[in-house]
Length: 150
Ligand code: DQA
Image (cartoon, rainbow, N blue to C red; front, side, top):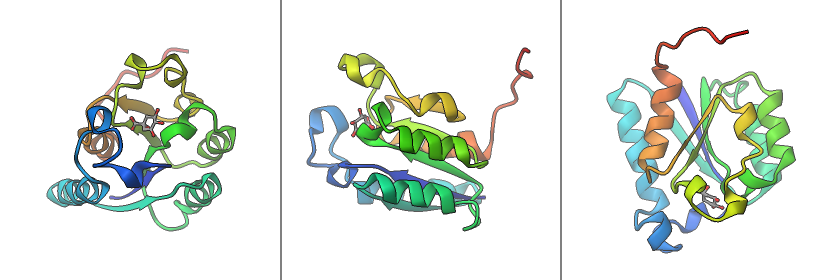
């Protein structure tokens, strides 16, 4: 399965940006890890980064048309307040897994709330670059789970 990976604002600075929080691995290296991980599992990824909300909305909207089977999405700071991105995730039928490098629930109060999480398939946070790999696995090899209670 071909998975789209979207990195939001400031993630282009990974490696030098607050290394105590986000680590020293660069975005190029994260994308390389993802490509290798996907290849070993017989899939593929396309990785894109933007600092612009509208660009991320456009990519979310186009993903199904472009032949992707799901989206691993780190919305960066937009996570906490972008209704436009929340609405885009809700509007599309492709599954979206929200990922974060840091454990947003253990940081500042304003990071504990995600406007995306309720419309995403799920959220993975706190595992550094591995959050993205877990996001890929969640989309491509979903664990068996009981039917939701009504
Ligand atoms: C982040 C967490 C966000 O709160 C922050 O604004 C980011 C990165 C993460 O991956 O841990 O830019 O999404």
